[in-house]
Amino acid sequence: MGAICPKGKISKARRDKRRAQSWKIAVPNLVACGKCGELVRSHHACKACGTYNKKAV
Picture 1 (tube, rainbow, N blue to C red):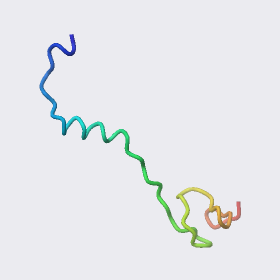
Picture 2: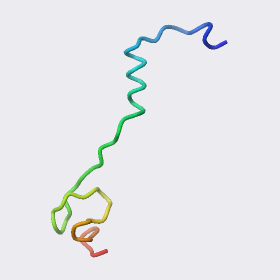
Picture 3: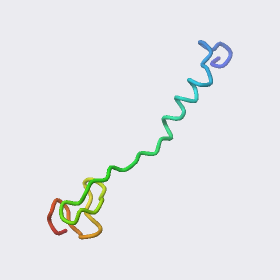
Picture 4: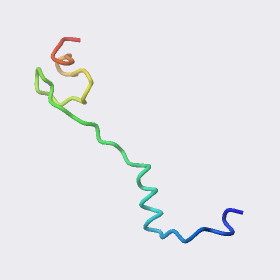
């Protein structure tokens, strides 16, 4: 009997605030490549020069 006896009204603002959190899109962290200075996602190989941790991959 879940909907018959609710435990208290949840306001629309509180409900929508909670629902908005699950659909957030995370922005990838970008760092400068150690060799060429190109912006690269952290812990990924550089697409411009093909290096990872200043070593050729």
